[in-house]
Image (tube, rainbow, N blue to C red):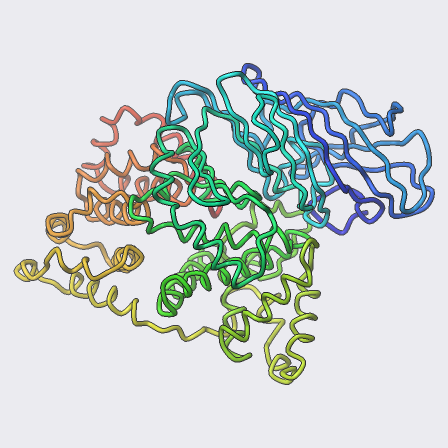
Length: 601
């Protein structure tokens, strides 16, 4: 059996080297009719059977080197799907290759595919399709060895309705309707991605375009205009960018994530379009994945921190180069708070708060949280301090990336290389409580001491508001926020949310002097509206409902609905407002569902 608890595929016996995909996108039936040819390398003698991962796929036929092959579907598993067992019509020896071709159709309910009606798009005229394969959903789109331990190249030909454009996580090979795309850098199956919609693009750099519906394309070109600078900064830190093109695709508002690092084509939520480039650090994160995650990949989802912890570390190093060391420290402090929130949500004894959790019979989607990101970053930052500072430690990170490029790694392999690289400091590394960091739930054993300069300004302003009496409110001026960056305004509002509710007079005064209602930065708006609703400002309820329903990013939508639910149920006045909303039935049923399924987003 495989050593990946989230996959059925037998990759100790054979590995996929290349996928050749032919996809026909059918919007009427919400399916993709497809054929995939897998080039498989055999790793043992007398090889005659292999297992692929699949989920809800309708398998029509299977052949091996052009000869019909027998296949059966195994029993269905709750989250792993159904093993596709293929018997070859011949035996193969170690080192030989076989081309296994599967003709199949996806299900309308394929977990990797999101079919949007025209009404769910920004343009309202054409339907839209996007995929999200991480962590283990590619198997609902392509029968494959759906494990991050297996890396392959892929080539795709896509046929779509004539008014629509297809783009994938690959480099375009032609401008025809039947678009040929190829990726010549091996990558795991979870990074295969497709989008079909009424897309336009704008060039924003020598190797960068933005793609989106017409409604967002110019905004996106402005917002992400610093992408080439970020790419160059990342290359200086981590080594050459090997993927050729780096495009950004802004999805319709219902896209549930902030971003997804699909190679050559980062997916981004339109909630990043703040109008002032202030949320482009999400792009710095996705760019960083080009090295940590896409080039060097976690071998299984149990080692997810190798992807995310290093990516957060690299993202903050880019921030350090482009902004300042104080900015990096400020973002790191915010990350520590996010980690505390995740640990509180799961419970401090929950094994899913381990840096390296066991995922035996655990759906990786249920294990998802900020733990691998922020506990991972905290460990790397702690090691940075022990080993001699950011320049010294970044030398290790770059060396680790170059050594393990194009492969998948485990935590042990990472740690062994850390000890090899810093062989003159092994005595210091031996003093690290590795068991507490890696395999113990809850907060890390060491709390880093971050520079508080940028945070202090936020604390000072929030304390002024918390302590202010009604007669002191005239001391607040528009200029209070002018000295703060967008990131600091976000932190200022977060601090207020962690305290008791402000009196309504204060919140109204805050709107009067700072005019936060007109702020289009989604992170600021998200916190400001919760602050208003909590202080029982009726005008904010419809605005909060609007934000919760106009975009689908889980980071905002889930907490907004939960927050509204709690607040509205504690106030008859607010309930009246909710009942008068045309969305009343939808909201109450959604909130009920959210209360039942309070997974971390």
